[in-house]
Length: 353
Image 1: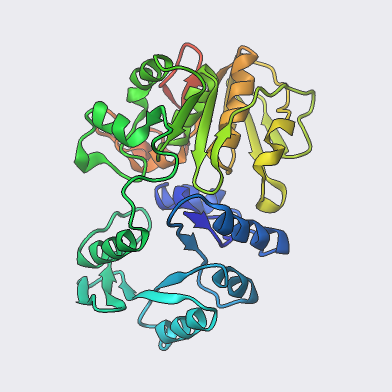
Image 2: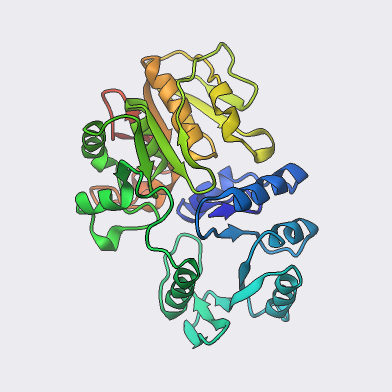
């Protein structure tokens, strides 16, 4: 998924405690640099199919993005009269083929009205933090698979660690699998054992929690697959007194020390990855937080691991998942965020921040 709207959301926001999302979300603005990044992500991606979330405004910025896409799906609230038709006209005017035209209702019944030509129907229950399925979703997925015409994805055959196969090998129940395949911190040591049995550089392909990518990068030379860029090698970064200027850094002293990073302007290119210099900090343990690609967080984590720190990565999606004892995170750790250790003696341990 390419996040084509700088609204501060993303995959993390849909699977994180709603109160925490409201506290942490930082809305950005459309800039020429951001739109260029979205378009480059579309045109340079090696994937046979890319999905772009453009938000809900028919704007000049979205005109540029649509001109670089081949098709579009409209999901709109039927209470907003004429919204579906307006988006249909907008997309077609910029050279895109309409794939699906769907009403979205929180309450009510899901119904598939037509799959001939444009898919039409009503999808109920598209609410933050909830998983949905049904005939409408199935019809859209089937159509997208028909468009790609491929079963093996770019980079998949070159992978040394395929996370989809990994989930099967770990015997993760199908009913617990989500966008991160149901991989939880208590699988960490087994995952690392499997990874370290493979030759370096270890190529990681497929969806997974960010802490998995970070853990593997801390332990071995690795390359992480990015749907926009292909495999991105994780470099050996050096620490610096105050941190490099390519990112903005916030250090919160404590036990553990918190290191938060933000990307100025919201856009970070892989070409600058090797230039990063995370700030030197005190203490035995470091917890990383920041919104960015997995390969960026993994590279920073590796730098602290190579400096002898125990490293944990903030894992906000864990707030909506049951703990191993069945409790939800909010009941067990009200007002705190989860982080997972990825380097050091405490690998796989979750702590409350």
